[in-house]
Length: 632
Image (cartoon, rainbow, N blue to C red; front, top):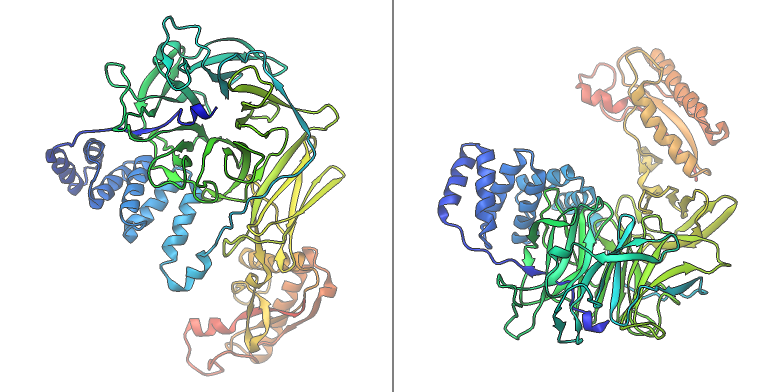
């Protein structure tokens, strides 16, 4: 398998500089607010200019934004953002956030929003969160067994990829091309792509070349598909127009990423990734389930080790964003390879993280804007003392394949079916990260409980806030998380949980008393019934008392000085009793409300007593309802 480390690599496309005439026309149209023409001319100019000015990028983005092309707007603003040292002028930062929201990239948009607001020094502390990258070896009894496929040959067969109800894989067993070239490194034929039917037992049916006419005379390997299977990403050797290998200065031939549309047996609208280069290798693409992210492997300059895992955004117009290194939480000084995404978990192979030997398969939870939890080794028998890699699952999780050059195989690399042992019930893993809702920081020591039927499984979050619980496949899992001092909460659809601290639900009020943090409750003039606005605020009191059942409160209501004193006293008392009745109607135990009292205008907070001329805002300060915490 190590002979194929650099298969499926990417290279930067080489373009030519466009004349300044196109840019001048674009800028003239931009100045005249002719954004449609400007967008087209900026696109033409920027496709051929590798070092554009930030101002040009921002104008191009603006032209696209105002013509509804948020994908292009986000793409150009990303480049401007990076060129500006991860910063943009306020106008364009706001536009970038809105363009990302238009592309439904909410996590990225929220992260930039935090950055934008962090320019205010008072909010900086809320944005500081650190991840600890620790290697955690998963120790458990073997629950699976591996079955070598009959379709394996005496050469290299590896890298299964689901293609609807079929499977695509790569093999050096080239029996379909007359006079096929031989790969000098392995003395085997260059890798070709095959497609096979999937049998009910997970074995491969009759295979045939995949997109035969589109395959080159050299390596064709490491494919990935868009969720609708209409777009394919393929890794091939870097060749020139004469179909001859194009090597770098050192004489090494690297592999580039091409992608396009599948039309029957044809490969249409072929494009080259903009980050292709003949000077380094990148490959092994994987696409996220929502089709918005492309992961791949590269030895491009600036990485952590020999080969690193990178990712980039896939925009709605099919263009690819700038490659981003997955960082030290994933990559080491060695080799990280063969990414695969299932739900919010990244599976990959590593030769350095704590493992059994050689390449081992690990899993990491993805949280938020592509942040990663601690690694977990999948253990035996998935991993062995040899190279184990290219781990993939079907969408329903019922079919799992692995590639390995372990002892007992038929060839150099073989594809294995991973099946549960007969005595082992079907199980699945639910994983996520628990964070503070306000600060966004991970919370260790949270008790996460998953209930499936009558079975309850509990785990405490690690230092990085992550949890991973194996549950039965049958039944509907119900997840809850709790920790003293936090309100309990359920996970989002990715398994991540935000907890709200008690201290974020209360505030210090009059006389330094602790009270529920709500907005002022407004009553209609001369009335005391609960308005919709008042109900929304009172629901915050209900929430706190439900989440923290030991809390006891007292209710105090106050008026301003306008009106007769005795009338104001009665009105405030009626309003206090009205809020009391609302809380009780929502299920709050009356015993948890120590007292209910209206004080009229007897406790003014400012100078606005009888006869004093005050503004409406000054009077409003005195009209208030407080929910004071007397016990917790």
